[in-house]
Length: 101
Ligand code: SF4
Ligand code: SF4
Image 1 (cartoon, rainbow, N blue to C red):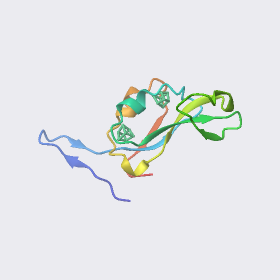
Image 2 (cartoon, rainbow, N blue to C red):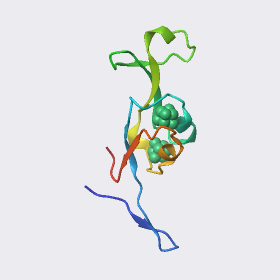
Image 3 (cartoon, helix red, strand yellow):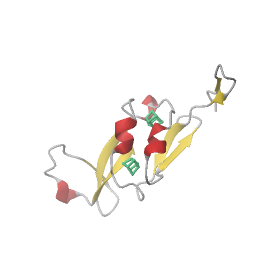
């Protein structure tokens, strides 16, 4: 499995850590991670009481079909491994890995 470590001009080595998982139990659907990700990786979904994911209607008239909203990884291939999402998450939901999941 290849990784993408680069050495910055300062001599510091930086290695991107791509989003691998978001903990659906811990997630409160606050959307903070979605706002900081500029790469269209994340997708807010509804989750019913059996853990099934349901598309969220932007009009909000399907609220009774799911128990809560959770963030999911919609387009993992777009992730550049910046970890901004993990840094802003108040519930520590994120798992990142040096290679794409
Ligand atoms: S690591 Fe960066 S690019 Fe990847 S999902 Fe998080 S904020 Fe988006
Ligand atoms: S910031 Fe954390 S708690 Fe909020 S939606 Fe994203 S993953 Fe869920």
